[in-house]
Length: 113
Image (cartoon, rainbow, N blue to C red):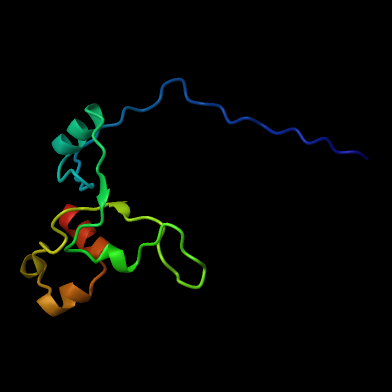
């Protein structure tokens, strides 16, 4: 007995349901809100920059032609979100010490939620 594989394509509904965007919160390099973000997109503004001096000294880690032993970066550029230290720990009932040890992405998600 031979079997024949007959894949079925799922049928799509006649009309897709309406979707409503109820809220939007974001922070991107060069844009702390949706208006700045849209402005950057519509005006083709690049938000890529050299590593800010307050983040780290990129000169210690940068080599345009690193050897594998040196473990250096081949780039001194990136997309950096401003005011990463501006987290209001008290608002979230978190001690400043605990806030400092948190992953910056977690702090950002708490601020934007």
